[in-house]
Image 1 (spheres, rainbow, N blue to C red):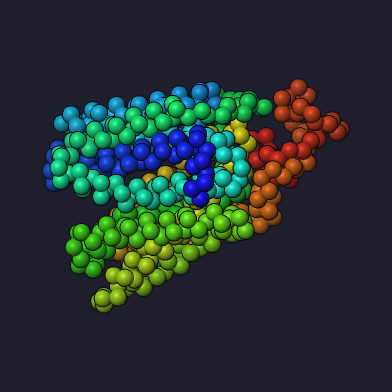
Image 2 (cartoon, rainbow, N blue to C red; image 1 turned 90 degrees about the vertical axis):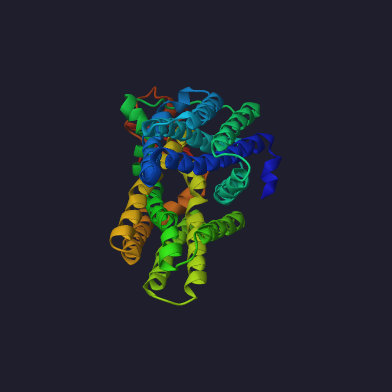
Length: 454
C-alpha cells in the first residue's frame, strides 16, 4: 500500500494532510485546557458549544466553497485555508473571553471545511488509476485513525515539559508546514467544464447536495453516513461513561477503549485495498452498515449485564468491531463519489459529502449524550442501534444491485438520449441527432444533466 507514496505530488499532499491532522489534534487537547482556564466548572459547556460550532461550520461552509471552487486555483484555495487555520491557532492562546474562543473556532473550522473537500477532490486527479486511488483512500483512513491515537499521546508528552499554550504554537506550525507542502506539489489542471453550472448562488451552493439526491448510490450514501454517525457517536460520547460509571475503571483506561475503536478501523483499512479488488463497493459498504446493527445488539447485551469481569474485554471487542464496520463504509466512499460524479462536479460532490455527513454527526452526537445522561446507556444503545439498522436497510433499498453493477464500471460507456438540451449545448459535442433529441455515449452520466440512470 505504501507504493502509492512514490507519486511525488500525492506524497506531499498526504504529508500535508497528516501534519495538519496532528496539529488539529494538539489544538483539541489545548482547547479543552483553555476552556477550563476561562470557564472553570463550565468548561464542558464551552467545549460542547465549540464542537457544535465546528459542526455548523462544516455543514454551512463546505457547500458554499463547493459552489465557487471550480473558479479558484485549487492549490491557492488549500494554501489560503491552511494559512487561515494557522492564524486562528496563533491567536487562540491570547483569548480571555468565551465568545473569542467561539469566533476563532468557527474561523478555524470554516477553513478546514474549505481545505478538506478540495483535497479530497484533487487526489483522484493525482492518482487516476483505480488501484492507486483505493490505496490512497486506505492511507487517508489510517491517517485519521493514527491521529486519534498519536495526537493525545504527543500532547501528553509535550505537556510534561511545556504549558498548554505552546500546543497552539505546534498547531500553527503544523498548518504552515501543510501550506508549504501544498505549495511544493504540482497539481494536475482540473478538467475544463463541458457544461457550465447555471443558476444563482443558492443553486451553485446546493449543486452537490442535489446531485446526492438525484443519484441512487449517493442517496444510499446519505443513509450509510447516518449509520456510521450513530456508531461513532456512541463510541466518542459514551466511552468515558462506560469506562468510569458502568465498569468503574480509572480515567486512564478511557484512551484504551478509544484505541480499540481506532485499531479496528486501521486493521480493516489495511485489508480493504485487496478486498475491493475482488468485492464490489456496494457489498463491502452495505455489509459494514449491517454489521454496525449487529454490533449494537452485542453492546446491548453487555449493557444489560450488571456485573462480571468479562464486560471490559467484551467492550473492547465491540469497540474494535465498531471501528472495523465504520471503516468498511467510509474507506470506499471516495471511490463511490468519484465514479458517481463527473470530474467537473467532483469538488461540489465531495463538499456535499463533507457537509451532509457532518449533519448526521450534528444529530447523533447530542442524541447519544442526552439519552445516555437522561435515560441511561441502554436507551442510548437501543435508539442509536435502531437508527443504524434503519439507515442500513434504507441504504440497501436505495442502492439496487443493477445500479451498482453499472457504477462499478467506472469508465463504462452508457448510450443515452437528451431531449431537453438545445443544439448548441456544450455537452452535446459529438452527439447524433435522433428525432427531437440527441444521442451519444460516455462514462459519466450521474449529474445534473443525467439525474436518472438509463
